[in-house]
Image 1 (tube, rainbow, N blue to C red):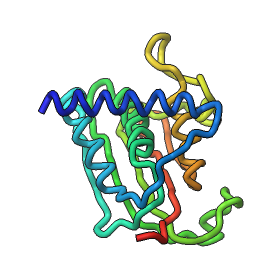
Image 2 (cartoon, rainbow, N blue to C red; image 1 turned 90 degrees about the vertical axis):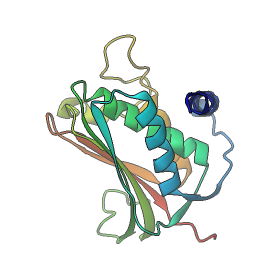
Image 3 (cartoon, one colour; image 1 turned 135 degrees about the horizontal axis):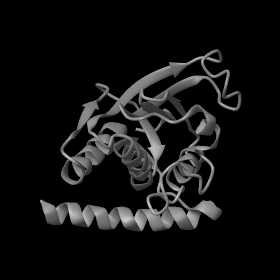
Image 4 (cartoon, rainbow, N blue to C red; image 1 turned 120 degrees about the vertical axis):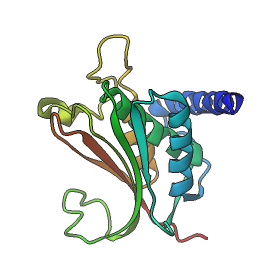
Length: 195
């Protein structure tokens, strides 16, 4: 089992290098109809084997989730980037939530995203019970090389890379956070019409 996790970690490293190379230029993705529940379950499995046991990973999966066109490896890396940030926000432990849900969004729901057409979306959420993101830096969190972590603890590329990947997939990321009340990131991807 440990060897299997090491192999998966190696595969994730390959994906990260590919993402970094693609950060400055659009990288080619291997797009396929993707089951978000499988991606979330795989991330949970890796987290359960590698993070502090004081952090409990809670999986809340949609029955019959819609599929999204995505590169499974890159989507997994997006979720992992956010889950690692969630873990780091809970140094004393707590719950880390991974959730999938089908959403039908209207023009009213999308008022802050006028570039997106109303329709059906799959939403993948990563939440925590951590420290929250200070309001004064919330507008900067998707900027490359911006980090709230102490020197040597973060590159500031995780959320920026995640933002870029999700945008390439035709989606977007929303978040809610308040100091002392945790953070929740919602990743929206258009429903795939392919089987």
